[in-house]
Image 1 (cartoon, rainbow, N blue to C red):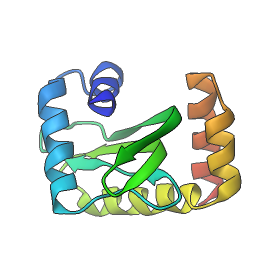
Image 2 (cartoon, helix red, strand yellow; image 1 turned 180 degrees about the vertical axis):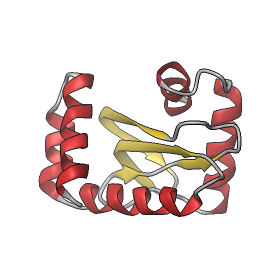
Image 3 (cartoon, rainbow, N blue to C red; image 1 turned 90 degrees about the vertical axis):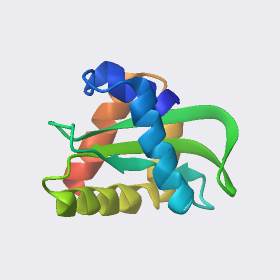
Length: 127
Protein backbone atom coordinates (compact mmCIF):
# COMPACT_ATOMS: atom_id res chain seq x y z
CA UNK A 1 0.00 0.00 0.00
CA UNK A 2 2.90 2.36 0.78
CA UNK A 3 4.21 2.02 -2.77
CA UNK A 4 0.80 2.91 -4.21
CA UNK A 5 0.49 5.86 -1.82
CA UNK A 6 3.92 7.23 -2.73
CA UNK A 7 3.26 6.83 -6.45
CA UNK A 8 -0.06 8.64 -6.04
CA UNK A 9 1.49 11.56 -4.16
CA UNK A 10 4.57 11.93 -6.35
CA UNK A 11 3.63 11.31 -9.98
CA UNK A 12 0.31 9.48 -10.37
CA UNK A 13 -2.10 11.82 -8.61
CA UNK A 14 -4.78 11.18 -11.24
CA UNK A 15 -5.05 7.51 -10.26
CA UNK A 16 -6.36 6.55 -6.84
CA UNK A 17 -4.20 4.77 -4.30
CA UNK A 18 -6.74 1.94 -4.27
CA UNK A 19 -6.50 1.39 -8.03
CA UNK A 20 -2.69 1.49 -7.96
CA UNK A 21 -2.59 -0.94 -5.04
CA UNK A 22 -5.07 -3.28 -6.75
CA UNK A 23 -2.97 -3.38 -9.92
CA UNK A 24 0.21 -4.09 -7.98
CA UNK A 25 -1.59 -6.83 -6.07
CA UNK A 26 -2.96 -8.34 -9.31
CA UNK A 27 0.58 -8.55 -10.69
CA UNK A 28 1.89 -10.16 -7.49
CA UNK A 29 -0.84 -12.79 -7.77
CA UNK A 30 0.76 -13.92 -11.05
CA UNK A 31 4.04 -14.56 -9.28
CA UNK A 32 5.96 -12.91 -6.49
CA UNK A 33 8.50 -10.24 -7.42
CA UNK A 34 10.64 -10.54 -4.29
CA UNK A 35 14.15 -11.96 -4.31
CA UNK A 36 16.22 -13.88 -1.76
CA UNK A 37 18.54 -10.83 -1.61
CA UNK A 38 15.79 -8.85 0.11
CA UNK A 39 14.44 -6.77 -2.76
CA UNK A 40 10.98 -6.71 -4.33
CA UNK A 41 9.96 -5.23 -7.67
CA UNK A 42 6.20 -4.78 -7.60
CA UNK A 43 5.10 -3.28 -10.89
CA UNK A 44 2.03 -2.45 -12.93
CA UNK A 45 1.14 -1.29 -16.41
CA UNK A 46 -1.96 0.87 -16.65
CA UNK A 47 -3.47 2.65 -19.66
CA UNK A 48 -4.25 5.66 -17.46
CA UNK A 49 -0.56 6.42 -16.86
CA UNK A 50 0.78 9.36 -18.83
CA UNK A 51 4.23 9.46 -17.31
CA UNK A 52 5.95 6.24 -16.17
CA UNK A 53 7.97 6.28 -12.99
CA UNK A 54 9.12 4.45 -9.93
CA UNK A 55 9.19 4.75 -6.17
CA UNK A 56 11.64 3.25 -3.71
CA UNK A 57 10.76 2.13 -0.20
CA UNK A 58 13.28 0.89 2.34
CA UNK A 59 12.48 -0.59 5.72
CA UNK A 60 14.40 -0.64 8.99
CA UNK A 61 13.53 -4.29 9.55
CA UNK A 62 12.79 -7.08 7.07
CA UNK A 63 9.17 -7.38 5.92
CA UNK A 64 7.66 -10.53 4.45
CA UNK A 65 6.82 -9.88 0.78
CA UNK A 66 5.74 -13.03 -1.01
CA UNK A 67 8.11 -15.85 -0.10
CA UNK A 68 11.01 -13.59 0.96
CA UNK A 69 11.78 -11.05 3.63
CA UNK A 70 12.71 -7.75 2.02
CA UNK A 71 14.12 -4.39 3.06
CA UNK A 72 13.93 -2.68 -0.34
CA UNK A 73 10.93 -2.37 -2.65
CA UNK A 74 11.13 -0.65 -6.00
CA UNK A 75 7.67 -0.03 -7.39
CA UNK A 76 7.48 0.58 -11.12
CA UNK A 77 4.51 1.99 -13.00
CA UNK A 78 4.25 2.24 -16.78
CA UNK A 79 1.76 2.98 -19.51
CA UNK A 80 0.45 0.49 -22.06
CA UNK A 81 1.87 2.40 -25.04
CA UNK A 82 5.45 1.14 -24.68
CA UNK A 83 5.51 -2.03 -22.59
CA UNK A 84 9.01 -2.84 -23.87
CA UNK A 85 10.31 0.28 -22.10
CA UNK A 86 8.84 -1.01 -18.84
CA UNK A 87 10.59 -4.37 -19.27
CA UNK A 88 13.88 -2.63 -20.02
CA UNK A 89 13.54 -0.41 -16.94
CA UNK A 90 12.66 -3.39 -14.77
CA UNK A 91 15.77 -5.22 -16.01
CA UNK A 92 18.00 -2.21 -15.30
CA UNK A 93 16.57 -1.80 -11.80
CA UNK A 94 17.03 -5.51 -11.11
CA UNK A 95 20.67 -5.36 -12.25
CA UNK A 96 21.37 -2.47 -9.91
CA UNK A 97 19.62 -4.13 -6.96
CA UNK A 98 21.45 -7.39 -7.56
CA UNK A 99 24.67 -5.69 -6.45
CA UNK A 100 25.35 -5.92 -2.73
CA UNK A 101 27.10 -2.53 -2.67
CA UNK A 102 24.07 -0.83 -4.25
CA UNK A 103 21.67 -2.47 -1.79
CA UNK A 104 23.84 -1.48 1.16
CA UNK A 105 24.06 2.11 -0.10
CA UNK A 106 20.29 2.26 -0.57
CA UNK A 107 19.66 0.93 2.93
CA UNK A 108 22.13 3.34 4.54
CA UNK A 109 20.57 6.43 2.93
CA UNK A 110 18.18 8.21 5.30
CA UNK A 111 17.19 11.13 3.05
CA UNK A 112 14.56 10.31 0.39
CA UNK A 113 15.96 12.89 -2.04
CA UNK A 114 19.48 11.51 -1.69
CA UNK A 115 18.18 7.96 -2.17
CA UNK A 116 16.48 9.02 -5.40
CA UNK A 117 19.62 10.82 -6.57
CA UNK A 118 21.76 7.75 -5.80
CA UNK A 119 19.38 5.53 -7.73
CA UNK A 120 19.25 7.93 -10.68
CA UNK A 121 23.05 7.96 -10.86
CA UNK A 122 23.14 4.17 -10.71
CA UNK A 123 20.58 3.92 -13.54
CA UNK A 124 22.64 6.27 -15.68
CA UNK A 125 25.86 4.43 -14.84
CA UNK A 126 24.27 1.08 -15.67
CA UNK A 127 23.61 2.13 -19.22
